[in-house]
Length: 172
Image (cartoon, rainbow, N blue to C red; front, side, top):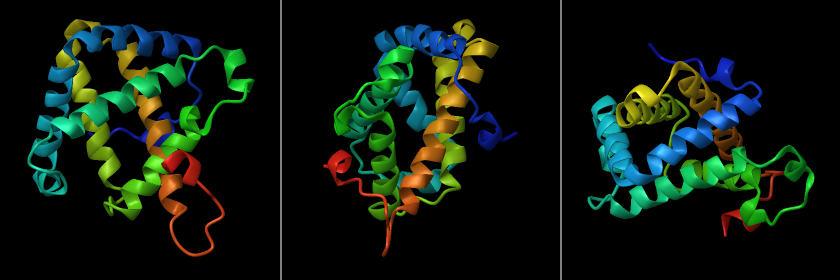
């Protein structure tokens, strides 16, 4: 049953942030396995997506893990840090908007792909963490992924003539 990420993109509470942080601390030692599980599940759900990637997935897995680590760090910022100025490369929304734009512009990733990616991510976390992947932890990751996917879709919408969102600084 697909998760309604639109409904899940609600406020991320301190309890969600704590669950994300705790679970990521458990993922870090098994990061390579978690990345393997993610891509294994993604290609089980959508075998046609395999063609979107190079045969050597090692660099792609590193990018996935780096982005997840960035997201965990950004989500776990203290409340007062959200009001501070940050470099464009560290600004969660600019980075994720640019990521969405790249996925749309360069890779032509359709919006419907985000559901399969979310399912694969949650499955990999569940499988990799076992009992530590509690209902609360699943809800926290679902909310973060909902925020991530919505923001990436907004970035994809920035493609084309007349786009008013300038993401070059975050896009590099």
